[in-house]
Image (cartoon, rainbow, N blue to C red; front, top):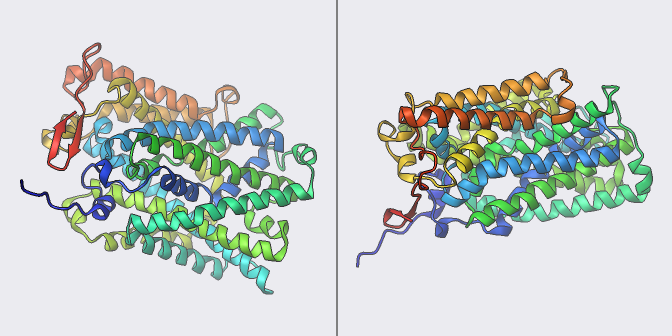
Length: 493
């Protein structure tokens, strides 16, 4: 019997050209948990906690952090991690089944190119401010939020993230395994130091720093919305991370432990520190918690926590780009593509450093898009396809695939996306915080997610089968056959 050619697992993982078999996947339960923890614990966790402290007191803030994050993480996880973990498919390639080949490219541009460029710049600046604060602790250096040291350090963070990603997922795994446990220990130490200064009762009684509305329900729902946006902000990235996990269980639960648990811990620390010290910027209050020695250690690790987050989102973005780009870009060397992708965020660091100060507004705007995408994904995968996919259709040439829809676009899914985003902005404007009376009862993300899903489901049932789009099974029919890959190619279950 002829032996099959050995599979270059790292190359498959980097480029995402085909679905990965379970034997080709490198992350078990704990490896994916480490990756998610390293992704979640960065300066942005403290900033979100600090932003929460602006709207509500500590007691309501803890409730908002827990409620918002669990809802956002669950919606993002069910929409991306479960299907990608089951089939080993790249996240935006999987989106061909609901948006079409060109539609998935459009979503990639909206959800990854624009947003990831911004996130990389924000995280780079967070790294720069941490280094600036660290330098201020060790010398008489006067910290400058947009000074040259911050900008150069932010640029260095982007270069470092690109270097690690260029070396592939194995180096990412090692980086996460070292940094994530250390970060959790530091968060625990910070929490202990805060509690040693004030009693639990005193902390829970602290009021909001700057509540913008007289109605406490509105302030509380904005705090929930900010944290739901934090959970949903992982939508563009965690599917491609889950793709490397060995099974569906390993693709799902590490999100609850890693992203939800680690983010909540970091945000609660940020909330308590901001409320107690009166400043929501962690690079400032962190230096006052445990003295010089602890401040140096904490700022150093938190600075590099931003890099771990940058590494993970940069990796997933490049994997998606290789899938959706043209042949010339697909043939480009991985290292060169990573370098080119880093150019735009590096420019943003130098020309628009003020993006850092508008962090939570930028965060909530992303939820307007991600909540609708999550609703469409859940409606399509769980209710229309009943968790059964045909991989032949996903990877077929565009002109031969039933997922071509109309010229590569699925108008139904795109309309549902517009409806979801529109409903979100009507209920709550992240830029001005203007909101309707309904917002204080139902938030903006949940209606956006629900209505986008309902529109997608209803119009697909009404028109898709009649138009021959999407290979959706008729109502009440037997579930469609799903396909898995083995080393010899494609075969039926």
